[in-house]
Length: 414
Image (cartoon, rainbow, N blue to C red; front, side):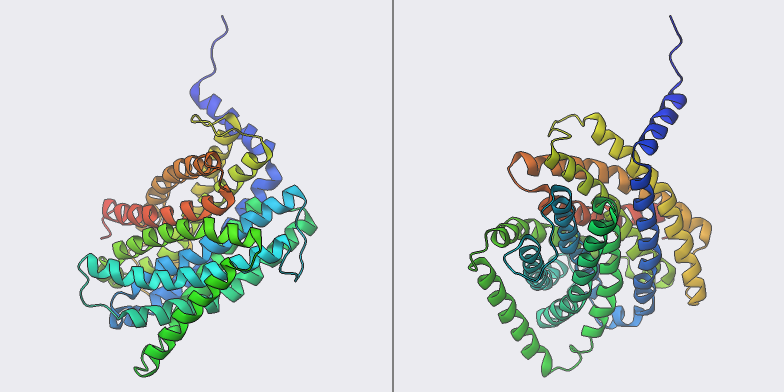
């Protein structure tokens, strides 16, 4: 009887087969993740540089992960839907509202406004409910969330359409590149937009007027969209809004987790630099996995089984392969960027250790949530492109925040 190969050899053979099966797609995904990680340092440096604003506007940090994450949720889901449209041959870049692309764009704009308003209310409610009694007002939250969200959504929308057009023209796999690039763009643009919106809340007579106008406009846009008679637009909004609200609530709790450790992060602003790219990469890994699984479900390549089939398990292996270099790069680049900006750091060794430990914990949850969330949506007759990315990225914001804080405690940083 021939000897069975050793476990290490079996694992090595499995890794080689996964890489060889989709070498080009893996390179595309890894490059997109690396670019998004480096790009997210801009958001991290912004967060590390506005510690005074975070201190003078108590509760704002509760909103930040949710507002950043929501851009990734809304436009990452848009990228996933456009990726499916490319695979199925229905993608056409056009200005006409009744087309597949037109209705997807309108739905994303409506969802971005509606969720921004909801996040403002949720942030205030969760902050007060969990004992943060000294926070900015609901009107302040509304102005920062809606105005900042609207400014960033314009940029991220055009980027998503540009990536989709490039993917269709050049033969890129949208499932591999959309989630990292779109979520990174959301991080980079949203935080400066929120910071710019904070200047409005310092004009006391203006804040209530702007907050009221934002609320009225958002409700009006939502009502018009639902009554427009465009079937795809209505379906996307109706299916996406509930899951996005749940995702927003999860993100707000993630922000609360960090807000309660604010003084520890202020002591080492390099940790604030680490937060956006770390959370973005946990979400981007989940976004890639979710998009790949959604496409395979749509094309009938995998079944919605309780036990993951081999093709799904190959995607799990790929996710962990991505995680190791990505979380190492995140920590090293965050430490270097903090040093250049003269921000205090606990040291590159502890930064890397915390990022890797926290990242691998979070990636384990990514695999479980992406797979079972996707097949649950598919079995319920829902589009996993609408539910997978919001569910995964928001869950990973919360799990990632907990995992990062836990890792920082384990390595003795906080």
